[in-house]
Length: 307
Image (cartoon, rainbow, N blue to C red; front, side, top):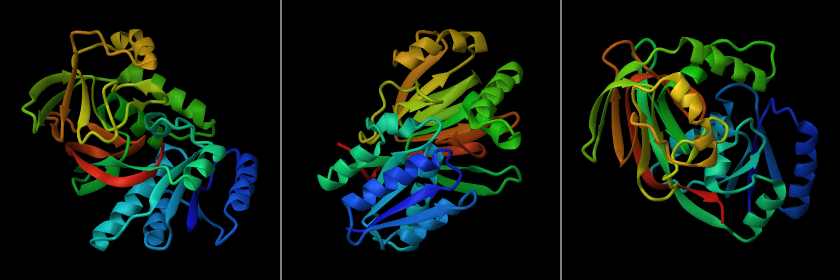
């Protein structure tokens, strides 16, 4: 049994992780644990791609962004080598939001991780594939496990990426949310799906969800399932920021939105256009680019450690 940990290099609680590493090395002494530490943005993608074929388990030590990079490294490796058997993915949660862990229904603790490996508790789940454009118009392709978003959520992530300051991660995130809410302008979106949806209008957000949670614990897709072969779409049309804030309590409790501008749909593929200015696109909390975007589901694409 070969286990590699891919560590987000700037996690804040290094002392806690050092204790967890000792527990893992004690639980799995031979051939032992291999620690791979990312040193820059995108490095975990490279580490994961190189690790495929060498390890049975790849464990993300970080948050949703670390999981996102590791998934993309694995999918790049499979694309380069047809038929490559990917390692089983696991999570040791050290992130700010850990929304994928919530969607997966696990704790992300070291004790749980050891138990899942020892009992071979594994399950196949779906992954999303998203294509969009960079600012200069070049096409880009990314994979995601949890949620892709066009609209206000993606605008928050874009602002956060562009305006990092000396503040802590939590304060940077809060500052980006407030600034976006004060300046956000609704976008004219066109949304079509393979299930027959053909929608156009002013929109606050379109969320294409594989998992249930995003935005640090908001249950934006209460009907989503990681292994049902479909994306759960939450489409919020011409609702105001005030409407959104008034529904935060429902989102935190996992209660479906009760607003005439909110719609729920399912699909295997979604096309999103923005006739005016390009709309920002994000997935798993990572800013990816701009519309036009295509989002599609890949059933059973990866296997993860989970009950």
